[in-house]
Amino acid sequence: MGAYVSTATCAAFHSEPLDCTVVNATSTVPYRMLGNLTHGEFEPNPDVAGVGVIYAFFSVACLALSISALYLLLQLTRFMKFTGMNTSGSQAQEGTGDGDGSSYRTTWADIFEAVILSCSDQQVFTSGAYALALRYAQGCSISAYHYNVVANMMLITCATHLMSVTVVSQYWKHKLLAVFRTLLVTGLYIVTGLLLSNQNAGLDLKWPTSVPKKNETDTLLVLPAACFQGENSTLLKTLNESFGSGGEHFAVDTLRESSPNNHIVGWNFFILMILWYGAAMIAEIFRYWYRRPSRARSSPQSRRRALSKWVGRVFWFYQFAGASFCIVAIAMSFKYIQDLRSWMNNSPWIKRQPDGTNPENDATSFGQLVPLLLTLLTVFAFLQLIGDKFDDRWKNLRRTARPDLEVSQSYNSAQKLSSQDLSSQDLSRSVDAKSFRASSLPPTPLLEVNEPQNAPQRPPPFPRQQT
Image (tube, rainbow, N blue to C red; front, side, top):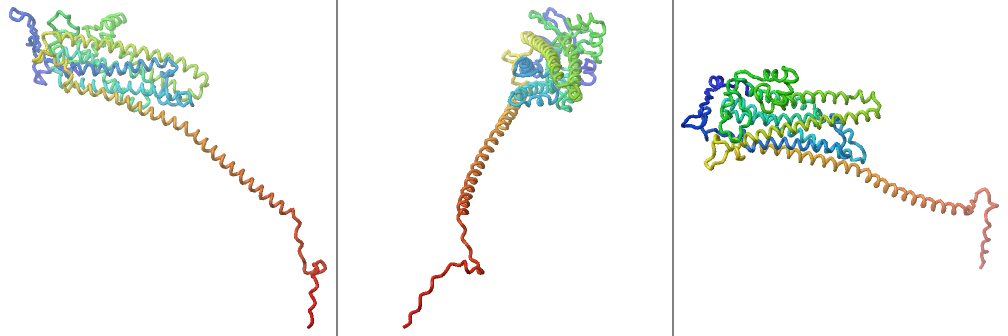
């Protein structure tokens, strides 16, 4: 990724002989000629340093920054709990209270964390594509100016990834995806380290990293980046120069001056990112150990609540410090890129359009439209998450309203049954009353055949008259 690219390798393996000569000013040319380039002949590269590419990277990073800041600040209010010690599924388990609104707050926490991860994932693949293009497609042709721009865009990407690992409490909710994401991010950190350390090759021509002054017109930034690189990687050498000379050298030269040997813009932020990334991995291990099931069974619930409150606050300060550091790193890298572009835009070296405009200020090229349109994926993911969570909220409201409806229906059914029972009881009572009245009458005597004396006497028949 930028390593093993030099003038010798470009000439031997890529058939691209490079001109790295520097000719001082003469009477005919009142300025230095760099690599056989004169004023107005430096080729722009809108696909690398175009305004669309720069703002695509910066806008995604700013979205992750704003969501992270809002997420952390809301945890200080009554609208959201501290989520620093929550692991996979713990927020959903805590948000099952009846009527306390905790499920609503947990839903917004899930949305915030998902958007931050979406920003990180988007920049993983975009920056990976730029790193591969820088190593293979443009390794011998890219200038030192464009190389510095790409290296600091990679630094912005690393800060976005670091913020996602630090702020997102459910980073390891999906274990396999988290492992794959961690491997990609770790590889991206290695690539960024290679790009930055190549600026410390230590050859006769030192890599130009500082932004020229406004009144300067001559700079080595227009030369190919391969002119300043050796045939071997300098990552281990630069790391040894950063850490191997004691604490004072590390604090002054590496962190304050960002100059392990040659001045490398952003190297101090990269070193701090590596250290913070290692601390974030340790914090994830501690978070998993703290939320282990055996601890929940062995410790009393009241003790766990009191300890979790304080540990959650400590983790909030850890997350806030990480987010603040990422904000500074992103802002400083973006400022450096903009200062470089501003100087080159006003310099006499850039090759302009016939109308005098700089092609890198036109965001309509294909290489710039692709990263710009890819930023809409995060917006669509955000809208989809809000739609899904509000659907869940609506289902929960309907689920809570359904028991009331069932109780009302059962009450009406009971009322109908009770009224039917009352009417049936009244009917039975009336029937019983009639039966009682009928049974109170004296019974009709029955005549037996063997009791003629008790039979009523018939009147004598009329005598038959004789004629």
